[in-house]
Length: 80
Image (tube, rainbow, N blue to C red):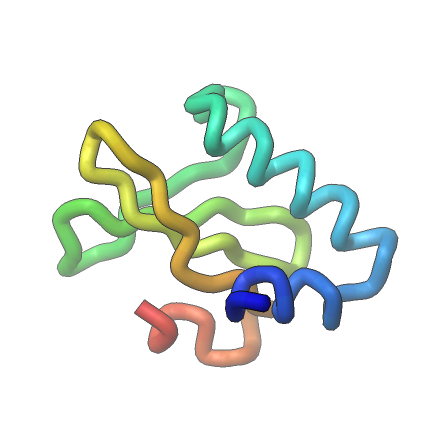
């Protein structure tokens, strides 16, 4: 099990379903429906806000790689 799956299992079911929906939209590149933002100081690293959680991902134009899923107050941006 990788760290993203492990992080998802630790999230309460109510929040997990919303995060999973956001991941599906993210991987389908339907970014206009998500609250995406570029991380300052990085070229290809972005964040998606889903309630109290943040999905940190890398997008090089061809691939999207999810780097972390954490609560906003858990030093989310240090996971990059």
